[in-house]
Image (cartoon, rainbow, N blue to C red; front, side):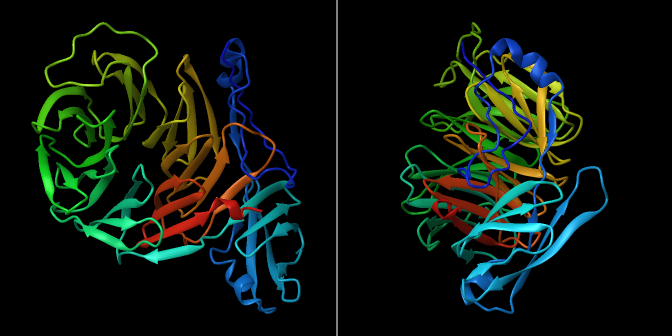
Length: 428
């Protein structure tokens, strides 16, 4: 029997491993419905000055950084200014806030009023890539290259080590909202405001294919297995299945009366009888989940085009992602992350870290990262509940549009045009 635990609290012991927040894999399936039907949790967390680590680098005894923590359901917050100890090169305790431990790029702080602990991680490298907003980023399977898209038709292939631009991909007109590597790592898929999909060669930066068929902005894409087929979703309410070789739209998987903001591709656990059309490859057993502007969470079996479930989440959904084979997370405009278990879609578990819209959800192995419109970026684990929340800092209230993880490095792209890199091994 597979087990899933939904846990609405986290450990206050800052000495434990800093990854974990929720244990989502140790509750008996039979207990899931009662656990999830009423589960909703606001996770207290501390805010900090975005450039808090500058004083640590300079060892300046006059430097301070502010911290605050808002209590749920109350309009007041705890505030404090934490000073650096130039001799010990470490922050000192201040009022209601206790500094548990620190290094030059990470600090763990506890608020005594709420008894919550938050660990902060500063970027080890920040690269100003553009003077306008960045929108999307992906990492190649080899880990050597990243692709990043932005306002005004801009898209680049960069070195993941130092951010050096290797290729400029010119051809779109308008903002580019989605860019992804094919599994080969040598081909890029993109889509955006010009309502076209483009397929690019990383080797020379040329556009090999242009796919047209949407009537409004393309918001997201998915690549089916090795990439002979791809999926796009747009503000016209269509999710389209394409054949890359012929540039042909094989099918409209759904036609909704609302904009589709995001999609994620996973495993369909129910067998549907259906014949694939010509040029359709790798869609068998695939489920496509869609996050919609009108608050609808929608899932469709790709091969049969049959609806698996649809439900109203109460407000706009900006993003979605599979946390594991059975658990889908939806990022909401009100700051909530709603988790749906595919074995029982009638009930959900909700958590929130702030009221700011959730813009992206990224999962790698057992790590989950969400980014928000207020510049916050939260890191937690779906496996271990023995430690607290990690927040990646650096953005000064500019929206963090997308997050990617490669090994022990976390990348963010932001509205301020900066790519920030975080070393997860530096977490105290």
